[in-house]
Image (tube, rainbow, N blue to C red; front, side, top):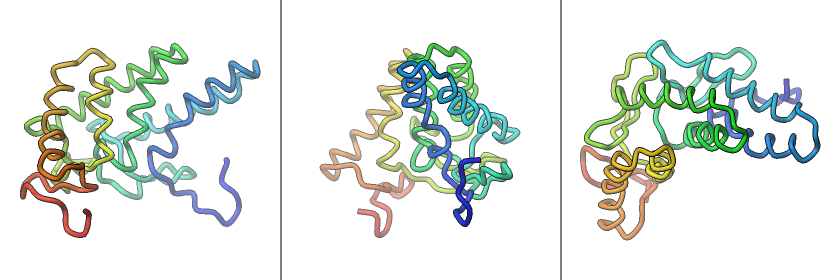
Length: 186
């Protein structure tokens, strides 16, 4: 199953879901479809393990499918899974990946989005667990623009730019409710 003996089978969602660009390209270069198939299987497995409200957790046990970190967001630990669904749909021409992204986006907009910020919530109930912006979320406006939602991308980028203007950089954690850098996260 790709997990060496003695190694943990727990990984972040992004770690499971970011092989499609590289492995899809490798399959095309070698003529062997196995690489793309394995990457697609990982994406599909995550999709099938999403919560009943359509959200993904932050860490999953790849051997059992049990979510070990159940906070859902668009930043660290989840970020490139969402990004690669879109880019993978375009690169390997798999419209089903865009459909998976769109399902996730609907859940994200419903449960995470507040005033064009994206908070961290419980993947099962949608209740806010962390009212923060993470610097690793800065890809999101680009993804929204890539799929043609320029307006939403610009609104999100405006929020991120306000943080950048305040500090001259985007801190790792910015507490949205308090309007300041998260403690010990400069």
